[in-house]
Image (tube, rainbow, N blue to C red; front, side, top):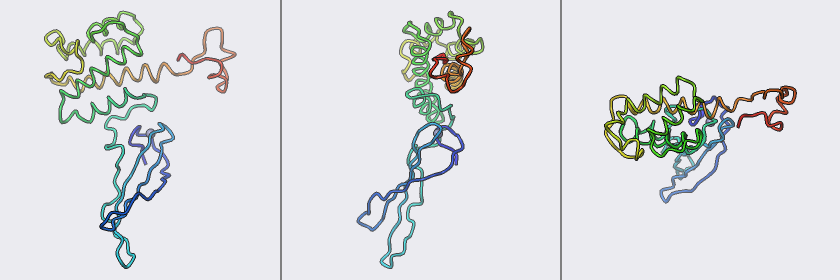
Length: 220
Ligand SMILES: [Zn+2]
């Protein structure tokens, strides 16, 4: 099966447990497993009615109770909450409300830039300016961030920058674009920057994989 959280192919090893019997003799059981890749749990529920003859009839076929839906845009397992949670929510709500999706994503963008890029500015517009000015971002991500402001028409809708979680009208493609840019930022901050690197002049100590974590050879 594929983990509904991270989309990694995993061996389905389910643990089963009895929950309760309802007054109408419906027995509810749960099955769960923990993904070895991302560590998140998936829970299934099933309802079975027990007849007087001791025959079992499945009245509610097994369904996935948690997560409530398969991740629509799976992220690498390195991306932690709350960034992943907000991203999943923004992706899930996109077809129903691009406004709500874009608001969640703007707030998420602001959080990533504050926590990972260590920007000091308060408004999202200025945070983007600040992080791009450091020159530490790959140029394609810098361009994508500029486009967040342009596609969202921040100049005409200042509230998108000042109160990022505000539910306001969105431009065509804005909500989708915000998700795309978040994916790029997550890749950069949570995946690429965690690749073990050999520090200059320290290649002997960092050369052995088993020693890397102890030797402090990770960037983060
Ligand atoms: Zn997983």
